[in-house]
Image (tube, rainbow, N blue to C red; front, side, top):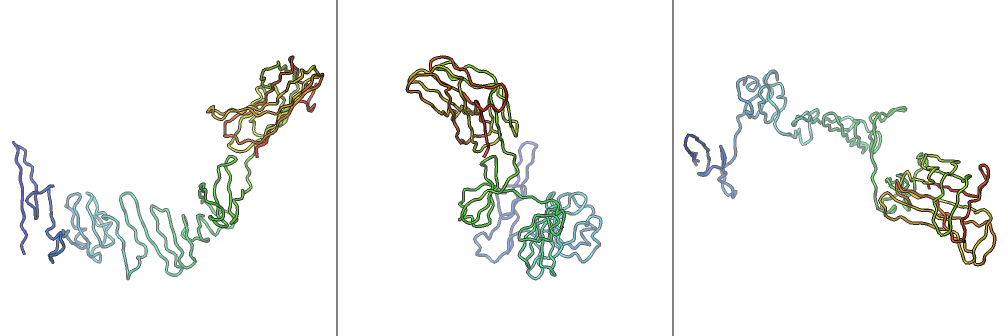
Length: 375
């Protein structure tokens, strides 16, 4: 059965815009080929037959235009040189102005299995496939980055063609000294340890970031070399605390500060990481008169950079009757701090008159102390 070529031309002034339609009177492009067997009932064949040549013919086509498309059906002829330098397999090729380039991504099969040593260029990427029958190892690479599968030993390698474990990301898996590059990243999960199963690993953001493993029952923390924050400070200089006023305690002597997280001048500790911290503060006043039905408070003031969840924690000592006393108070509590949150010691009392902190002439007097331990 004959098919007709129908050409539609539209002329406007001196501009001519021509369109060619095959099997259509209303072409929608410069060349519009419309299938006539769309319902699948006809035995006629639709499609386009691209010029078919062998490699010898392709390498002799020196005058073709850029973007010319051909199908090479035979590579047994010619030398794969000059224009045909890339023609090493049967398939579609286009001319880039200098050489023939492989078109698309072809999967090659020999007797139902992928053929050895195939290299395919797709855009600016090079894909290659190689299999070794003797070891059963196959590897696929993109621009030299390798993913390998050892079918005999059920192993997968990333960055290596010789995996030596079920999953091997080492560049040199068999080295006894330096396996070379290879690292992987762990993420967080809310899956329970029994669901994850024994041997699972995860990252946890608690305490500044920790690694945990599942024993099938609980998530257990692996030991870390992160240097935890530890602060020990004491007060040896005089400071007055008026009645009914909250006073921040300043000008400390730092005994220990593992990570330089404590400002001894202001008395402010800044959390270096998000995690749990135990904070303690105790003090004594010098001997003085105490008003009946009064109290004193050892206060730890927590503040965040966002201003959210600020609060004071207090240790309170009450005096039902008056008298003279070296009154004091203490507080110790464990709190979760976000990185950048601060904690500082303060005192409040309503015992009547301004009180003086009881301090000695040197260190280790033990009357006024402040400490922080990162858990």
